[in-house]
Amino acid sequence: MALRALARNKMRTVLTMLGIVIGVGAVIAMVGIGQGADQTMQDQIANLGSNLLFVSSGSRNFGGLHVGWGATKSLVPEDATAILKECPDVAAVAPGTQSTAQVVFGNDNWGTRITGTTPDYFPIRSWPFQSGESFTSDDVLLASNVAVIGETVRKNLFGPTNPVGQTIRIQDLPFTVVGVLVAKGQSPAGNEDQDDNIYVPLTTLQKKILGQTWLRFIMVSARSHAGSYAAQQQITGLLRDRHRIREGDPDDFTVRNLADMADLASESSKVMTALLGAIAGICLFVGGIIIMNVMLISVTERTREIGVRMAIGATESDVQRQFLAEALLMSVIGGGFGILLGAALCYAISVGFGWPILISNGAIVGAVAVSTAVGIFFGYYPAQKAAQLDPIEALRYE
Image 1 (cartoon, one colour):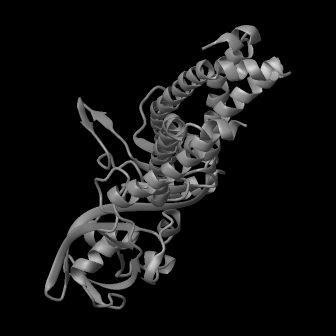
Image 2: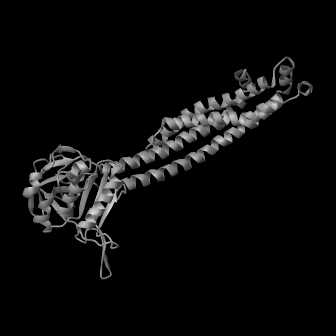
Image 3: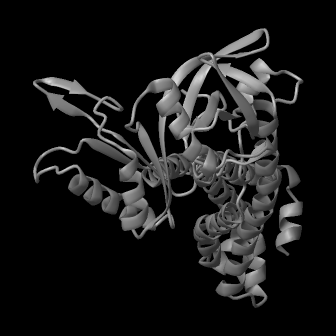
């Protein structure tokens, strides 16, 4: 009966459902954009490494002069060894230092960063090789002249040539390329090309190029995401003790936890998704008001029909269910088409703008549930009004 009643005024029914269609489609599209942005940010942060903590030389005040990262020379290789042995929530460490240099291969040259570290650096960063392999612990022990290069360095120095086994020169020292890393792209902040780097054994960079014994950083991998916070506290306590920092004095190092960055990005994304969803929800609210308005008009137009039905035995509950079914049917059908519209919008945005879109089952179920609730909520008053009509007055209505 509800289908027949709606079919009698097809155009009005379609226009009434249009508000629900647009509302549900907007909710799915907006939530998809928000969740896609969150997933992209989380992937970029995870791309930096597994449960990663970054320990660096911190800022200290020397007679009013504040010096920052890498300038205090407070980290030494023994600190990295102690962190691995004495911090139970730490799974692996990779001490390191950095410099910049002009690298030469044949007639080509390229200015890039040179990072001295240990073989554990690459598993900690979750960084696979596209060709070749990492240098070894023996290379670190012997200060061997071997190098692993990033994709940007490979493109600019070697082009189509296979770099593995080739010899490059760093500050007039020959280095054999033993591996090429898979491209990672820009850092999450967008201010650093992660592939524009050459990695050599830590001792090689310290002894043969820089002539230093201290470290600029220590990469640390915690045993789990939740354990990274415990590892951060353990590292802080251990280094304060090793560096003989008195209570109340500032640290001469910094421990950054990438889990903080991930949590902050997730919270920001949730706020954005909620805001976009709320804006789209307004469309659903407007669609519900349209349904109520049209149903009230329908009750007025069909007053005599209601009177006849009640005169031949229909109860108030029967009349109420009929009009409520019509409102609910428009919402459910509109919600179904809204899902298709939302999916089409997500696809168009993803293809047209290159934005990442993530349509979750939760968003679809939520949109359908809300559209159904809208039909019940906004259809109840017209249905109640129809059910409360006096049959005698309804039969007299012109």
